[in-house]
Length: 114
Length: 113
Image (cartoon, rainbow over all chains, first blue to last red; front, side, top):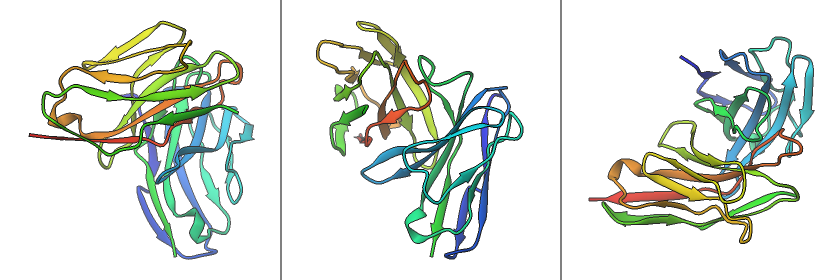
């Protein structure tokens, strides 16, 4: 079954404690991306990757890091989480970009930073 | 930059009512347009799409037509069901960059018996 998986689905942590949210896709997609969803703001892109070792900033990259060492995986790293990073996070993938295709989305990771 | 504006919700309808959720966009190029649906506790699912002017996307009884002259992509369904209760997002992807989806703020639909 074609899917994007994220782990964990729920996470509560404290300010400053480094964390990683994993994302994996089984569709051999080149494009992967991270979004955050906040009430009244819709989804905003954090980072994206067009292929292995190719990443770039989205609209709200501050406080986040990513890496793309393998085609299937695209982890999101919060080196020093802060309460304003409390949000619902979605990983997405697409064959070769979003134009004309949109993207497949993972189930989401709800992060709370206290 | 690109932007998407959706009507604010929540939208509350009785089962079998007609649904319209308005969506307008601003883009520098010729974007692809999408509607995504998010059921409670789940991720986003692509509902329908249109890639050029006058295209009509359709799926599960939902329709939307790409109107370049009014920069709109309104979502419609002739007869909603309780199972359609969800949050609906309008989105665009610029043809030039193809590196992201730009989303509206979402419209919550609640359908009652």
